[in-house]
Length: 69
Image (tube, rainbow, N blue to C red; front, top):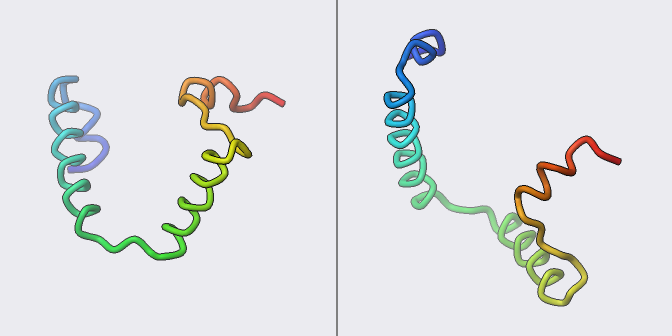
């Protein structure tokens, strides 16, 4: 299936396709190894949040801030 074929699908069919893709990707991600450097980075960032050095933002806040000084 190519992009042209996807654009012709109904909204319902597109959602069904997205769900199928998500399930497939999720099952593969759960089986794949995460590089230790990625785990270390996440742990470092989480430690900064826990210590108060960094703050987690809601996704809507992040989207609204994109492109603003």
